[in-house]
Length: 265
Image (cartoon, rainbow, N blue to C red):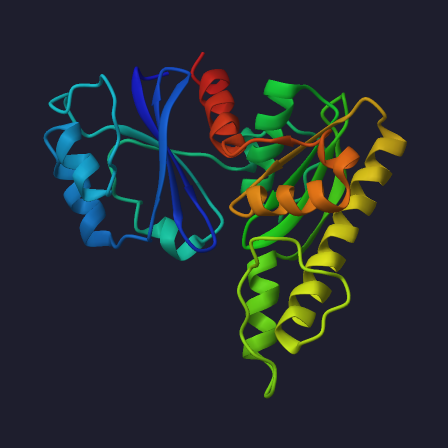
């Protein structure tokens, strides 16, 4: 494993970056997608300071900004077109399902889901159920023998709210509320919020309770961009359940670190 390296998860809507010193995650940040010309500039950077500037990284670290570049990047992607722009970067390690130490993965299984459950199991133990609250809301379960149990995919919270407003003639666009909306609303906007959020939370509870029926000692870990707001809703509605769900933002980076450690030994 290189002393200093970057993890890059190309997500459905953004790039997710992690800076590592060996196995230690130093900092994370998100950016918009970048084009092939910018990747070529990154490959020509003579030091890490210039590299960080191009990828909009505002981080505090003891790594010298004059440390030589290019820096090695471990990349996983769920967006093939964005992944293609990195083909000519000189120090890329492509992470695919072939690197994932989970059994019974099917060929179209999302690499983001696979890395998240590897990260959860590596740090919190298997069996593990990962709930990823990103653009899509996903459930991924793996048993103590690292066999894929299965999972589910549905539109995430933000996507559900946006789609209803975009695909109907009379319904308004609504925001994600800061507080759990009341179940029985008295206006259209709050009715949309109630319908989507309470149904989503009920679905999460059903999956988690079913998981614990089959794996009473199994971990449940929530990650993804909406994890904080969904956790707050769950605490308001199902506090006992919420108190047993681990919240962790960096599961995918932990999964990438695990893969980098095992494949570079």
